[in-house]
Image 1 (cartoon, rainbow, N blue to C red):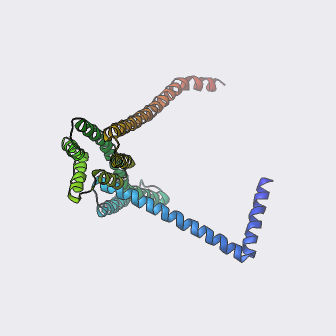
Image 2 (image 1 turned 120 degrees about the vertical axis):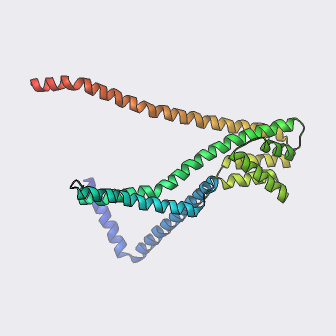
Image 3 (image 1 turned 135 degrees about the horizontal axis):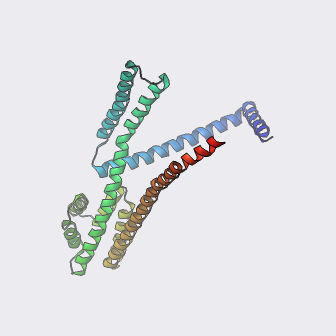
Length: 272
């Protein structure tokens, strides 16, 4: 009954669209506009996210394209060559599988470099946030010792090693050269690397400094908030890892029960 009603509604809708040309044109135009808008939004978001991943990994777009093409060619060629050897030896698969396996391998090889870049960018963002919280603590300590804001920022940036502190020092050098606010440059760095936490912290501290508020209090509060976020992320990832570790134990227990119960079940069924 429900299928008949649904089929009748589809026929009625199709007849209405074919009979009324203006309605069909409007529906077609609306769907076309919605499709183009969604496609443009997806393209813009994908491009901005991928650009920030490439910049934080210090990889240019041409290298990524070359890696994707090489991965696609290797993914297409190696399984194809292996299947050809198996077919020559008389142990090949069906014709459909001979086509499907190289295509799947080519798609995976084409997407693998982008996947690695996304994983590396996530690791670098976590490392940068950890270093930035330490940078804020060092700046707060130097401010408590009577240093000026710019002096405390530069000294805190020079006290650390690694890629994250190198980026902070580079941004502070640009701020000194252009005579701009270091917090605005740090905010721009957070925007470039898709780190909204850095942008938020830099904007709020810059606003506090412009309105004469206590920068030390803002720095301490923002550093504590950033550490709390990091601890929450670490705890959630640890809980997820614990849940993933429980699945093999459950499968092992089920396999053990099946292994023990299989002879008994076989004897019972054979006795019937």
